[in-house]
Image (cartoon, rainbow, N blue to C red; front, side, top):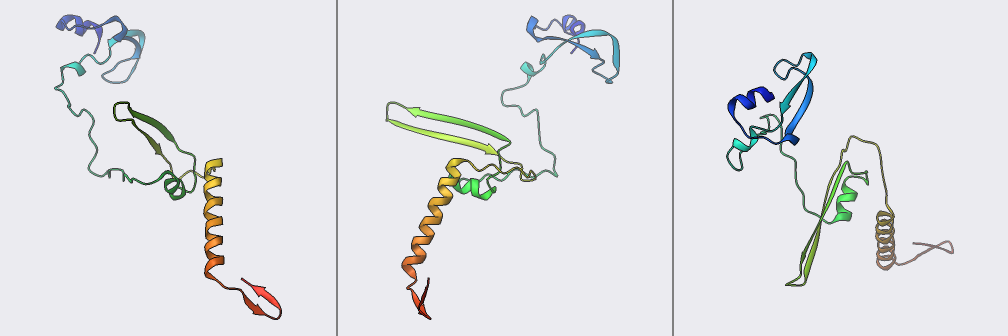
Length: 148
C-alpha cells in the first residue's frame, strides 16, 4: 500500500516496513520516479489462522510418507535433495530426544548423490544378502566344480 494512503487512513507502521519501488503496484508499469510503499500493512488486520494462500482445485496435495531414512533415499534413487531441514527435539525432564529430518526431492533431475552413509548401507545390505544366499543354497557338484 502506498505510504500516502497509509498516512491518510491513519494506520500504524514502522520505518523498516517502508520500501522503495520503481513500478506502479496497481498496473505493473514502470515509474519515472520511485514510489514509497508500506509492505505487509494489511496482514495484521486478518483474523488469526486466516489462510491467505489457497491451492487451486486442479492441484493435488503432496503425498507424505513416513519411513526410515535409508528407505527414503532408496526410493528417490539417491538423488540430491532440493530442500533439506533438520529439527532436533530434546526433552531433558524425561531424558528423551528426537531428530526430524525433512527433505524434498525433484525426481525430474538427473543428479544422483550417493553419500558415504548410503554406500555403507548398500554394502551392508549386499553382504547380508550374500550370507543369506550362501546359507540357503548348498553347493552343487558338477564336473568337479562347485556352483553356488
